[in-house]
Figure (cartoon, rainbow, N blue to C red):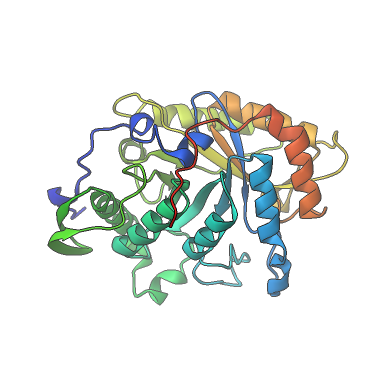
Amino acid sequence: MNTTSTIRPITKNTPSTAFHSHPGYRRMFAPDRLTIGLFLPLRFYEGDMRVLNGQTELVEIIDRHGFAAVWVRDVPLFDPRFGDAGQVFDPFTYLAFLAARTKNVALATGSAIFSLRHPIDLAKASATIDQLSGGRLVLGIASGDRPIEFPAYGLQHGERGERFAQAVAYFRRLMQAGRLAIDSPLGRFENAEFLPQPTTGSIPLIVTGSSGQSLPWIAEHADGWLTYPDATNTPTGPQRLAQKIRAWRDLIPDGGFRPHMTNEWVDLVDDPDHPRTPLQGGYVLRTGRHGLITLLEEWQAAGVNHAALGIQFAQRPAAEVIQELAEDVLPHFPTHQGPPTITASW
């Protein structure tokens, strides 16, 4: 890496202390406990934007029901060969919109592509949303997995891992108060201040997958880790996931708590006893609520602290699935009562 010492993080706080007063982080994460969030969009985009009609009202319902988080994805270009358009809306603009329509739910990216954008722009958008939402932003970050996007930005796909680490270092330095001097392969300046500052002094950065980094790097630099779940239709998948989580946590330098997250696309059927059945090569899990509860219990035992569920492939109406999750699943995995949203009269 070519990053210089001037952009290394200067805080000594661990996530458990740095985010003690962060409403979004504390709502989602606590040791040995699992909370539930929902991925947007709630319906799969197939060429017609009207599929997103009514989604904001459903997000307001998700907020009122007390889910821990809503997640938005970051997909700048839709590559039909990839098969999934993602969120469609720009994640930062959309989270700012949702911040004005919700009160408590954490607003999470899954994940912002740090290799494609400049860290000043990422930090500006993130700190702005964090302020406007009262400290509810949790920033999942990644190096990107859609090759078509990198030449579109004038970047090399093969260099995304190095650029990701450089962007993380630059971003963290921008989160420091006062006048700064930064000298990085991504840019340099001196004697300038970054505004606005986050509500509680920092924004949690949740690394997704490997993002081109080693496991020791993730253990040292990430405020949390989001990984794919492995198989979800049998207990062996959560068992393998537990081994991965333990290997990561064993490398955390101070031994402090770092949250782990995973996700699954769920087709929740109306038969509560329907067995866990993989669809689309394991990409989607069809199950009744009892099977889902069992899976979430297995994840919790494995060390997972938050489960982000996507329902865009569900056959039932989204409102119906949300209602069942709220009434019959969420009580088993309640959202944490952390510090309240920070109010401001912007």
